[in-house]
Image (cartoon, rainbow, N blue to C red; front, side):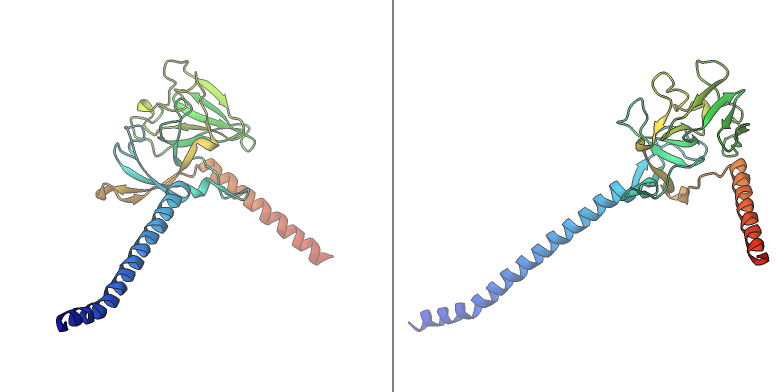
Amino acid sequence: MNEIDNTKSSWQKIAPILQSGKKYFFHLALEVILNAVVIATLVIFTRFFIMAPFQVDGPSMLPNLENKDYILINKIGYSSILGLEIGSPQRGDIVVLRPPTDPSVFYVKRVIGLPKDKIEIKNGNVYIYNLTHPEGFQVDEPYLSEENVEHTYLPGRSASDSYILAEDQYFVMGDNRVHSNDSREWVSHAPFVHRNNIEGKVMFIFWPPPKIQIVHGYSYKNEILEKEFVEEKIIEKEKKLEEATQAG
């Protein structure tokens, strides 16, 4: 009888400890699950709306991006929030896009033509005409390798051709002009890339380790000069307005 009583007494002492242990492991498991859900949500949100990794496939962006390089793109920079545009693709940006010939795949190219531009390819060079430069200008492209300088041709077509871009359309090309499937090749289908099919701007190479670096776009000389000219005119106008106000 005493043995039974001792057993009951021992169980009464152990039971609360076991019960407490069950509660602890239950709360621990719940905390782990909640943390996993939060982390997964953040990863998914980041992947689809802020940053995303991609791998370069092919030699079309040589010498600046090599085959199998792993890159990180900025997605939010080209997006809009509550109808307000954060930013848009600029000439010279290296972007990841879905080509009009097959929207299920991703390409890496450089933005050359912007909405409302007229692009002319002539004698291996690229010329741009728009409201700012109605007389046109030749695009300076120091990022091209020696093999590609003055070798922007139209495969299987005439030596020269021109394209007019509508709203939200972009003309893109690979830096390795002699080995790139880009807007020049898509003429029979649709040479332009719609804004909605541009995933984001390439910001960073993160693999392989020897190539880890920030990826910069390119600001073209003509557009820099035009921006400086506009800024000078604004300053000049403000100065005249200030002088007129003081004189009055």
